[in-house]
Length: 303
Image (cartoon, rainbow, N blue to C red; front, side):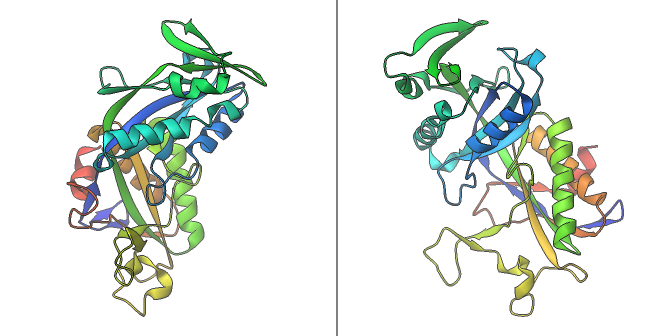
């Protein structure tokens, strides 16, 4: 397919159902909130950790429960891991909160979408060593923990909904083209597309992998060799002529409609980036995700 002068392979994006805890981290300033949200997301690809962290966007102080600037985060994992494993991983990740100066945390599940509740105050509150206190902010039940920069406010319960992920593979003339396109895609999604979050903020793109291994068959993921430029003469490559680099651009979203808008915004950003040659999507015959999203359908319906 030709889309705005860019080649889009007529293929499907393999999508996975995910558990999403959408939370709002607030802090003394927007820059501190962004830094601490990124820190909380941490090492956040399910390849090697039990939970993923992705940044959705910035929220002005006028729209937060405590009147301070904030950042929306998706803490998420594929539903095949099981809800109890997700719950345990979420509690362990949030236990780092009292280390982060000035920040507080609130539930931000989309209205009407909560499917499960996770009580976090009883776990994180143990940081308070008996000095933690219950209270109310607005109409929200919270726990207050005294830390070195003042009292940290944590909403007692965090909602969980079922969302989805999605990813595209982008071929560029150079590594710089890929990175520039990914950063532009992040900027547009964070600014304009609600309920969609990006990995590896603020770069957005990552180096992708395949499900399983050919040589190391006991590994869950390994390099996706057809997408590795240095192997193009050693394997059956999928890298088109004129491309010398590839970047994977994954997203999470709280709904199917949102992931479509996010992927469309990303494609538009890469289409506007000099040096981008082609876009496709990875598919593993259902080994990664149970739902297939045709790129043609995405471009036709997400206008």
